[in-house]
Image (tube, rainbow, N blue to C red; front, top):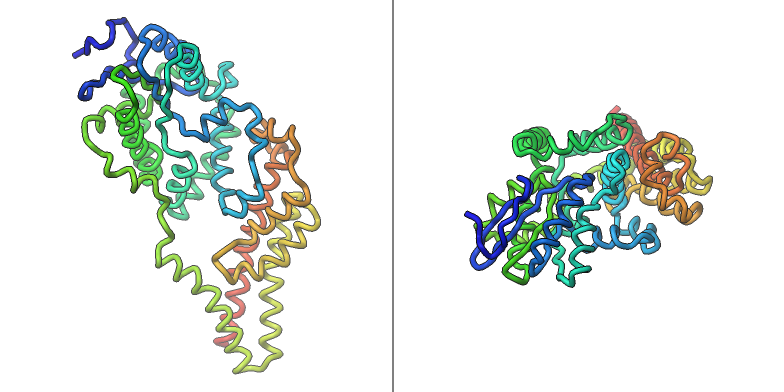
Length: 398
């Protein structure tokens, strides 16, 4: 039943009314690359003049939308030190795909969210940024995904960049319908249940609780259409007790810590055993094999990524050492050297979204080349760990 705290307007099915205590919320489900959504958000806020506008953004994404030169504060060296390069890459992959689709329609990704903020500002209405920190979301999604599913997810994201399928406003309207969207969520849940839980279900809870915390009795909330059903389902429940849990990045399990240290301990122990059983000459030969088996593939990875020569040398030197510790990988060491020796320039930060959509762009853009260095040298080091470890164990037991 419509709460009379809002005047009665004839809105499309994308606008939902929710009552909670003394609050009435107009929940607008949008497509992040739809001009229709931009117009609808502006219309509803202008007509309703609510006490507060709640937006599906966190502080980082809000700054990215409102600060055109946000790249100036992007400290790649610190990101690498914090081991968040993979998180940044996935974030950029998703943003690039949305930008490509939005470009087909002449709409920037998140334009309706920015429109909500701008319309509220023009009417002197406070806004509430109600989404969970995107870094927490991505890191929780990454940590909750198995190794196999990580590969599947990355492959899907990369493939989406080179997908030339055209999308129309009519198709977007169809995607926003409840039955189609429910099917999409069901498919995602079946293929990547852990990812869906983090990206959709947890954020439904977080968004619901933050909307309820917003000041005022008459609210307009602007969220992606994929969150509407989930928010409506959990809105009347008190899920505030779950916020601490879903805003915490899970620590590495003890099992993975044990496994992570078991490989280097096995290799070092085997080299010591070979030295005791067969002499230091054999131990030295096996150590040299380990160095070459790790260093060469990692260096080749750097060469394939068109890395700076010093990066290639650094990858060769780092791989045999980093393979003996789970604390840091060769990819991070090589990426750090690459940023120091061949830092991206201003233009490349500005064009990274477009460059991601072409194979050539990945090697041409120095920022994307950092990602290639990270991936290729890390993969080369992984190959070397397997090859070198196999040879050493074989020599020990033969």
